Image 1 (tube, rainbow, N blue to C red):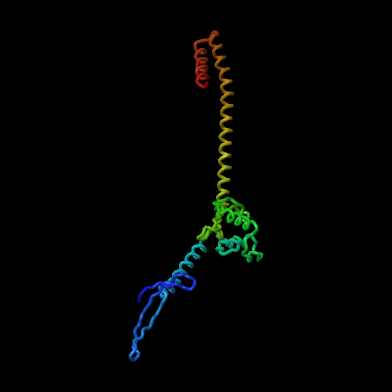
Image 2 (image 1 turned 30 degrees about the vertical axis):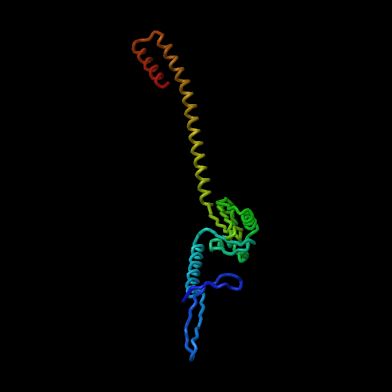
Length: 231
């Protein structure tokens, strides 16, 4: 077949394969013309490939442990992975309200702010619906013309991490306080000891100026030498 380009009624191009098939009809020679859109045979396979890709992407999103939500420009939920569904159910304490898949008022306000500005919010610390601490990332989704048509939101629970950081800070402050107290104690003790030893040294010096036996002078000299060493 020959590949030809035809023009549809709406002025768009149609690429097709043209086949001429001669056929005899008595004394006349006739031709059968067959037009088949190019790539038509490949469409079922392409469709299958596209479906497989969609399923693979859906599986990846479903197994991610962080809550993921995708909404359109009006705030209608297009996708909510199982982690997000569980979080929503926990926030409603299993009272059936979680069956409503719409965004909460706070989620809607945050989504609208991002879609209106067109600027992504990355790892913003927020209190989640169950009171736990989350890092929220909200990214606007744009079409081929650059217009915002929706938003994808991902949140990561950092409650345990924040608790560990707080405990680490508390332990550090306790250790620093203990070190400071020890330093102050040593400074005070050293001052008091030096004051007393200064008195001992002064008195032994005076004592050495008095009449002492040789043995007494040796004892007093030992005391003064020791006190001088401590100072």
